[in-house]
Image 1: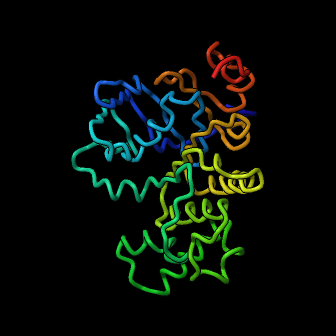
Image 2: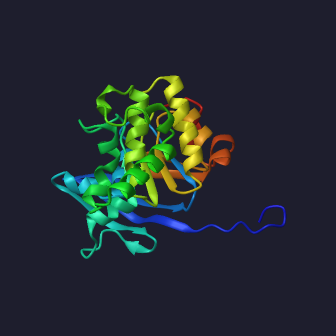
Image 3: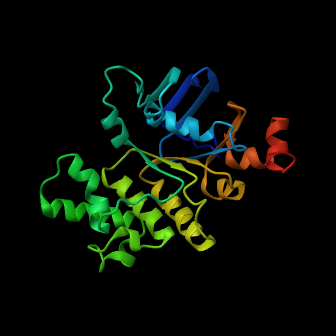
Length: 259
């Protein structure tokens, strides 16, 4: 309760008692973490602590790595995403992902954004064009590329390529967007555009972002979770975690004493 108001929130995704193994190596240990709808959650921690591995558990990208296994549960709208009955392709339509390095396809700008629509069976050219424009608008890129939609996406700058990849992920209208250090390869101006975009997108999406940049986590997120050595050490509102952490490991990390 805040100032007499009850703050209502809806749980969108949750990990329950999640363990993850690369062969015999246990990379994640008993992770319990939930994500509220229309909030940005930042995952922070030193390199190799399990942040990106955890992120990839949320849309089963780790399935593509041989010798891995998951124990425990991850839910999307209370549905277990590791259920044998689940359609993984459909899951990844609902839970989109943007990677550390921009990875546009060697196609035109238009065809990059239209790709997921075509895979999902869209045939109406007008509807495809309308959604491509809408997605590029959402990705804060339309004004920069509207006169060059049929040029190669590889001719865009790094920052533009990353916003194109975000627009491509948005085209199939996901409910959750996973972002794995989306600005780490970008200059400060391009980074600022990505951060502004995250702020705008959270009205429509649940966003989970891995970042090494604690200032970025403080700027863009509502909730921050600190990982260390494959464990979730602490999670709280971003303001509380950065100003009044409860755990000494968290305090040491955010004050630069280790990591």
